[in-house]
Every structure is written in structure tokens, then in C-alpha cells.
Image (cartoon, rainbow, N blue to C red; front, side, top):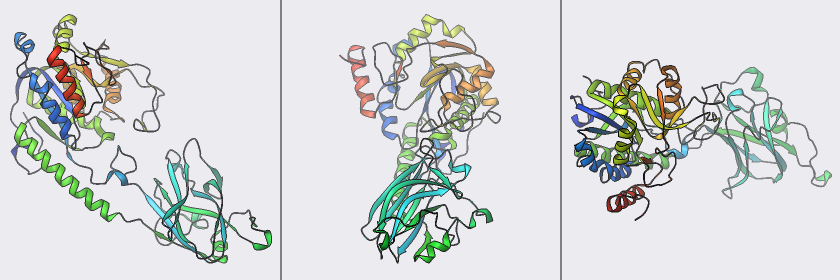
Length: 441
């Protein structure tokens, strides 16, 4: 028997004591800031577990716990590389003043392999009028043109008059240490330089047309009177507001821990991209603190119909089976390289079969195997695809059942329905309680 020591808040964080013997444990994957969803679940299907006659008649006991990471991401969402990580967005800018009219024609970044898989935003900003003049994106579908160690996007021709003050900046660019190879092409003011623009001389004798189409090195830029300096955009106000938001979030979570005692805090940074590690930690907790036969994983945005699940378990005679995985399986699911489900480390074009993350059931022997091997199991971009990869080595019996919904569709006999707001969970449960149909009465 064991527990996690997460912080010194109070004993309600720890759950060090033995939890008992149950036929099934339900692990509800939940984010720290999803208190409204947790409360909606407590007020609906979770409350029903305590009085459900179908469970009582079957002598089927259930323990349900919310799975929450004990550590928040302290980077405001607006400053993160993407919403699913805790990596701070890297932003650099070149601030400049124009002492002789120039024409700006393209924005670019240094051509490094680390930047090739990123979607990089480049901006030209007018500091005097406080507005963006140009915005362009470099990504896998629009890689730009390589010239002199840089990748450029053409943005047309923008005449910047004498006295113009502004800056060019890039977001989501890899930091780097400058080498001699790059030093001729970067304006370096003492910190890592990661963006630059290509400009052309404006010449009145050419009637406003670009005079020189060649790349202008640092020396030539200085020759036409354009000066630069690097700065990092400060976001102090945003940081302070987010710290206060995290303080309020922690207070709500502390109150939940004391009042309901249905949350397990695992020692984990609570972000989406590492949710597979979060589940492995909970598997370890369950094995060390509970005796059980079955384990059901759901998300905190899911409606659960425990009566339909129990009926299906009886019909499939699941209580007599070992080493099975019961869910709605995705087969030959393509590995994504961009967006929320971006996969950076799994090299095959498709994933092994995996159950939708909205809900599935495995036997205790599988959970014990996961817990015992968690230090050797590599995590991938999601807990659902990670589970499929891990299970491809264990080869459990896959019991395919479309009663586990993958999307927020609704039918009378569904086991789960995901992707709901707190108000929608309450409405679905109200319908189910009145007429046995969560979709409508």
C-alpha cells in the first residue's frame, strides 16, 4: 500500500490509506481547471452510483476517482507554444527606425531544421500607429524561399518612409546559439537572433520602383540608415493576471479535496500533451491502493450510462473473461503531424488499434501490467493512442462495441457520450432520469 506525496496542503491530497475492494474502479481524467465539469458529474451519474439498484442487485461495487495533476502550468495560454503544452512561446523582434525610405518585400527566419515542423508567424508592426502592417506564416504547406541561410515569404512591396519606427518579430521559433556560419546574415545585439527581414533600397530616380533586388547584408542595411535592436516583448500584466487565476483555481481544488474526497492528485504537470504519463501514475496508485477486477477510464466531459454498461457486461459475460479491452476501437488511424494530436515520436504512418478516449474497460491484470512497467513505457501524444501502442505488445482480447461513443452523438442505449459542457451533462442526465432516454423526453 502506497500513496503520492504531492504537497503539504493537507492530508486530503494524499489518499495514503487503503481504499477497499471493488468490482470496478472508474478513473475520470480531469484537468485542474475543470471544477464545473467535476461538479456536474457529482450531481448526475456519479451520485447515482451510490444508490443504483442495478449495481446493488448484482452486488457490484464501484469506486470512482477524478485524476488530476498536482502541478499547474504557470505559463499563460496566450504565451504557450501551443495550447497543449507548457512550453513558453519564443518571440523575438527587431526594432528599427528608418532614416531613408525603404521598401520591405519579405519576412524571414533563419533556415534551421528545428523550425521546419513549426507553424511560424512573422509580423511587421508599426510602433507609432500601433498596428500590424504585415502578417505572414511559414509552415509545411508554405515553406517560403531559401536564400542565404534564411527562409523568406514574399509579402508584396511596402514603402516605409523616413522616420518610420517599427519592428519585425517571429513567434514559435527555435532558439539557438549563433555560429560563425550565420553571423554574416544576422543582426546580433547580444542575445539569440532568430528573425530578420529582407529590404530593398527606395530610389526616387527609379520612380518608386525597387532599385536593388539583391539580399542586403548587415553592412548594406547600415549603409541606407536602418538601425536595429533586439528586444523581448514583456507580458507582465498577463503574467500577473494568470498567477491570480491559478491562485483561485488552487483554492477551488483545495475545497474540492476537503469536501468530496473523490480526487487523486498525481505528481504530474497538468497539461494535455503528457496525459499518458498522468494515466500511468494513476494506474500505479490504483494497483497500490485498491483491490479490483475491472477498470473503466472516462473523461470529465462524458455522460455515463452505468445501467447500459452493466447490461452489456451481463450480455457479453465480461465478468468471466480475463485480459480484455472493451471499447469503440479506431483502426488504421493516421498519425497526425500537426494540431492538437500532433505526434512527434511515433514513426509509423498509422497507429495500432486503440479505444476512443471517451470510455473503455480493461481487466485488472492489464492495469497491473501497465503499473508495473510504467517506468519503461514510452508515452505518446495522447493517452488513447499510447494505450493502443502499449497493448500491441500485450495483445489483449479486443471487444469492439459502438455503444462507447467517440463523439458527442446521442442515442438511447449509448454507454458514454463525450465532449459536453457542464450544463449539457446535467441536461442529458435530467432526460435520462425522467424517461430513460438521455437524448430527449
